[in-house]
Amino acid sequence: MTSESNTLTASHIERQNVLNNPFAVQKLQEHLGLQGITWQGEPVFLKQQVAALLDVDARTINRYLASHEDELTRNGYLVLRGKNLRDFKLLTELNDMNVPQKTQAVGIFRFRTVLNLAMLLTDSERARAIRSKILDIVIETIAAKAGGATKYINQRDADYLPAAFQEENYRKQFTDAVGKHIAAPNWKYGKYTNLVYEGIFRENAQEYRNILKLAANDKVRDTLYAEVLDLVASFEAGLAYELEQRAKELGRPLSIGEADRLFQTYTEHPQYAPLINQARTKMASRDLCFRDALHHKLEAYIQSVPEADFERFLGEKSKDLQERIAENLDVFKRLKDR
Image (cartoon, rainbow, N blue to C red; front, side):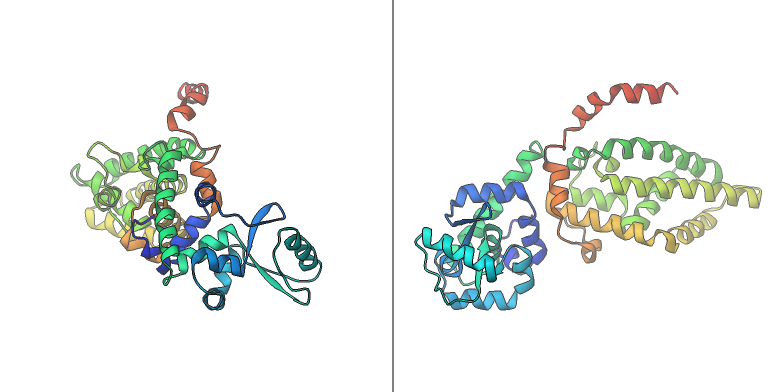
């Protein structure tokens, strides 16, 4: 989440990242304390209520409904007709609200829709104040749920440990193949590791470290999401095999030029395109949302983070890595003893 509140008015991805975060939305609902009409178990608001809350007139609300209809509908705006409208009219009467009996349709705004409008409105001081609070609460919520730091938020995922364990095994196969089948000094390990990174997410290790502001003793792979680790493992296993086969064909280790060409051909193979696109999308989108880290070379892949990812990394099933290791200690011991 960026620290600039005006980014919310300009970026639908930033807005959706707020609205897809159930923990932040709940905190915002508690903080703002907006009193609506309870409809189907949640508070909803009429247009005149929203206009008053955001200190604009109804025509302004209509204008944004017209210009951002799909986004607002996706985030809870609903037009009631028929039986739903009749039931709602009865409810408004009980709440001393006036919906004319001859009205054929009424638009209602869920709390998420009100937040959505507050993030869109550029001509409302009240909306600007809400945006500022949104940013504070989102940052506080992510930090609190992640245990105070987001550098290793990837490790809170239940899929992280199996992915990391698998990748470590394939990593050894890869380094063994590079050592045995490429005729070059020891700097080759860093060079061809970087080629793997560049093939997957267009950044070498140092560029990635700079973007995430990693310390000298931080390991890049400790910060990668499970899906990215899976793809790295797949690349390394495949490249190890290709290096071995090519060396057998030649009857000797590969030269630097031959190894470079093999890596380029491998990373450009169309079979990997869907997996690479998925890994780039997840890494770029999650890092922007959870770590406030922008991968400039992957900006085209950034999307809003789905609600399931907030549950995955911040919800009840997410856990600190040490907790997961303790829970799976017997499993790791059995694997080690094989």
